[in-house]
Structure formats: structure tokens, C-alpha cells
Length: 484
Ligand code: NAD
Figure (cartoon, helix red, strand yellow):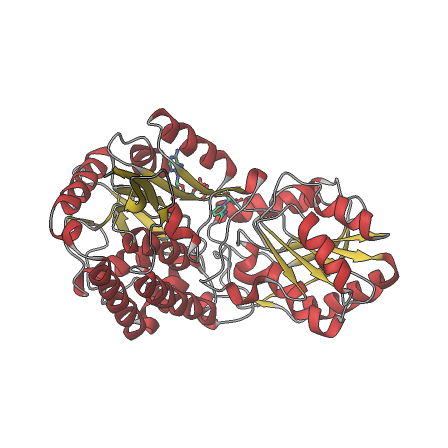
């Protein structure tokens, strides 16, 4: 069903506070993954539009936006957060239909977007430099300054949350942003830009150019007048973005997904762990960078955990986003092909349980039933590669050393969790796990905006969320005054 009532033209870019058609006049079809129909057309922005957006951002920095105090920037972000909350149902419907995620999850993402704006609105005037005791006759201090123009290349899986954490922090520090949302899902990025405009964000402080990765995305990551790039997406594209940014010697934040494990020891409280073991794998149909796709279980509890997870799996229902079941479709038929390709690759693994695609789900939708697979070999491709679909593998381990070796035995390191009542083991493993975040007796801690997030290894580098992001989206100047 086509969309109605959009308060902006989805075939336009927002540049310098004005909605305008891309220079080429070209558009791309946006597909509803719940039934394969066309939702709307969107702008196919290209290098001319990126140039105009970067130019507008530069002008904003030397104009009204650049003159705002930290307090004033914070107030604008807080106002954006309030307007996001006033539009939460509309944003949720846009995200649900565009991404295919169940409505309740889309609504939670919209609330999280508001929370990012509140958090970074409140934090904007609380990032300070410091004074440094130095030689006699000197006063030395540091200043936190914006990079300048920041580029934000965002994927399709959590558009609102990722925009909140990266654009929110960048604006709080006084940067001017150019946002390139994903071609598969960009409606909430456009709606967010419209909300920011209405909240009084000065022209050019946030510009949005939808388009293809190889065109608009590549033009942004290689642009000579961009001073920082934040990228979330695949390892292959992240490496290209880093190379492009490297040619201009600018910093990059890369958030590239993972193969995140949960370690279940024999003394774990299974009743407490069970919802996290399953939900962390199937949320957003497994298309989550921090999805827990590996469940490591001590041998003495292996059968019990598999049985308990299987019960949950059998009850999982998959269907159209607006039906608000446990899982929606995948983002696209292309993503469905990738995931079914992985299931073929894992045909040698025993299927412990699957969920059910609702019988009335449109055949033209990108549905895949969630799969729980038994995987005795931690080096199996399905235990090593990011699938980005609703597939979890359960791997047995003998003891703590074995668990640690398996947990650390992939190229990734984004999130890990430990389920044990043994405090010493909790502390040992929290230090030894190669991971950007470690959770003890929980997974994700509710996704808090306050918690620094990012990976090591092929999961990427740099940190977003929390105060840490404010340091990443700013640069430090040291001033040494000799006064005698
Ligand atoms: P992708 O990394 O290619 O796309 C992410 C973003 O990068 C999009 O906005 C895209 O337009 C842009 N992009 C693409 N090519 C570009 C280029 N050459 N220069 C600059 N920007 C470019 O991801 P995808 O193709 O949508 O998905 C493929 C796989 O990536 C998935 O199966 C999944 O494994 C992984 N993925 C991970 C995340 C995550 O959150 N870590 C998100 C999306 C996809």
C-alpha cells in the first residue's frame, strides 16, 4: 500500500534547510519488505547533491549554527527530542513499513531516537577541556572543538537509532552533518530531518541526501571538505569507506557488526537467561549488528538449554510488520537470498527448532523462519560468519578456558555476555573477552544510549553512544600561554 500524508516530498533531499529534487532528477523505488510492493520513490542523490550538502554544511559552520553556544545547541536537540516524541506513532509506522520490523520494535526505536536527542541535548554543554600543570610561567589548557563537516553513512536495520547516536552526538559538539541513509530504508531519516527543521535547527546544520551507496555514499566518504565519517554497515563497505577517508587523512568511526556470543555456564540462572538467549538473536529478524548469533553452553546444561530455547523457537511467529508478531520480514529479497544461502551452507547441522511464518503472510514478502541450529564445531562457517538473519547456533563447551577460546575465536568483537553466578569468573571473563561490550547476567542492558558502543577486530573501531561519542565527534586543541 503506498504511503500517504508525508510532510515532505520523499523524492527530495534536504539541503540548506530546503527540500529539493536531486540535480539528476532521478529516483529509486523504495520497497515494502512485508509484501514486495512499492512504498514510494525516493531521491537518487549523487555527487552534485553531496557537493551541495557539504557546501551547505560549511556555510552553516561559518554562519548561524557555528555561532550557537553549547547551551543553545543543547536546547535545539532537546526540542528535536520533544518533537520526535510528539510524532512517535508516525515515525514508528514509517520505520515498520520501510524496514519491515514489527511495529512495537519500530516504536521502541522512535522512543530511543528521542532519548538520544535528550541525552545529547543535555550533554552538549558538559564536555569540558582541562587545565594542565606545566612549566613555571605557563598556563596550559585544552579546548574541545568540532571536527567541522561530519558525514554519516547509515544502514537500513536501525535507521532511527543509528541516526540518533551519530548525528545527535555530532550536532551536540557543533559539527554540521551530511547524512546518507540507506537506499533500502530512508523514510525516518527524511522525517527526522523535517522534525529538526521544525524544531529550529539552523539551515545546513543537518543535510540529508538519499541515494545509492556506490554513488552518494562514495561521494560523501571521499569528499575533500568532510572532516569526519561515521559508518555503520558491512565489513566490505566499511573497508572501502576507510580507504576513501584515508586518502583525505580524516578520522573514521566504523561499526561493522559481529558474531556476538552468550556464554552459559553450569551455574547459570536459566529462567533469567532464556528470554535474552533467544531475543538477542531474533530481534529485528536477526538483522542487528549486536545480534547474539552464538550461544555457548557448558556441556552439563547443553541439552536443557537447547530444549528450553527450542520451546521458545516453536512459538515464534513471523509476519507483516504492521501485524506486530515476533519477527517481521527481512529487509529485501536480496537479504532473504543471503540468509537462505547460509541455511544451505549449514545443511549438515541439526535443526533444533524453527519458528513459523504466518500462513497468511504475503508470498511476495521477504520472510524467513527463525532457525536454531546445533553446531558442535565452533569453526563451522555458520559459527564464524555474520549471517544477518534469524539464525542462532548453539555450541557446547567443556570448561571456562574452552568457552573463552571459542568466544574469542572469530574475527569479530562487538558484544559478549556471561551467564554465571560465580563472581570471580565474571571478573576474569569480563577482562579476557575480546569485545567492545561485555554484559554479566544480561544482554544489551536495554540498549542504553548512555553506554559506549563499538567493536574491535572486524567489528570496527571508534565508539558511539554515551559521553564517549562526544569525544569522538570532536577534536582537542592544546593552548600553552607563556606569561612569565
Ligand atoms: P552496506 O554496508 O553495503 O550498506 C550500508 C550503508 O553503506 C548504506 O547506506 C549504503 O548505501 C552505503 N554504501 C554502500 N556502498 C558504499 C560505498 N561504496 N561507499 C560509501 N557508502 C556505501 O550493507 P548492505 O549491502 O546493505 O548489507 C550487506 C550486509 O552488510 C548484510 O548482509 C550484513 O551482513 C551487513 N550489514 C551490517 C550492518 C550493521 O549494523 N553492522 C547493517 C547493514 C548491513
